[in-house]
Length: 169
View 1 (tube, rainbow, N blue to C red):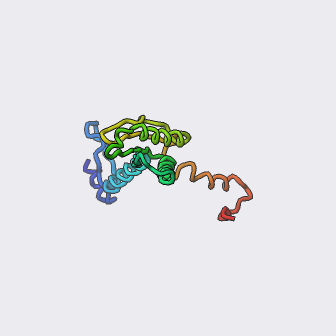
View 2 (view 1 turned 90 degrees about the horizontal axis):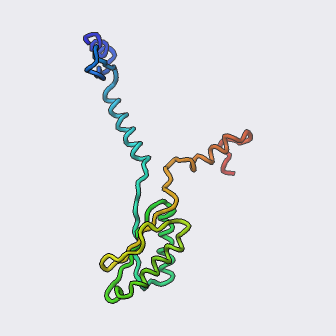
View 3 (view 1 turned 60 degrees about the vertical axis):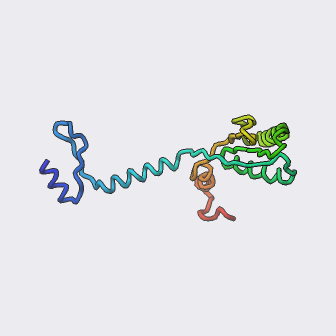
């Protein structure tokens, strides 16, 4: 143990005890600060790679005009393309709550128009003065730097006549 301490001081490293119960105890020479930094960095990278499910919300009114509907639907499509869940909320005011079928038709129309992008996770349901439906995207969110971004590079590497930096012409 004394030899190991001396050796660690000579090399300006830390002596870290790996298995204290073993006979003789197992130790390792390492820069402990760097080891902790790299472990923290690996943990951050692994957290970054996980799929984080984000939910976006789109609020509508039952008396929405066609143009406004198309605008809101465009945003819903965009959210679904990015891989986010979408919570659609129809807000009823005053006597509108009596005509819930209008809100239900509106939500079902969005669901039918977005059937190629999403599945209905939760059917239209009334909660107080709001009617809610949740859409789940069919395709999941793509990880940054995934296979889709490397496809262009792999084509250039496989072609013997490809000139580096000539992909933009």
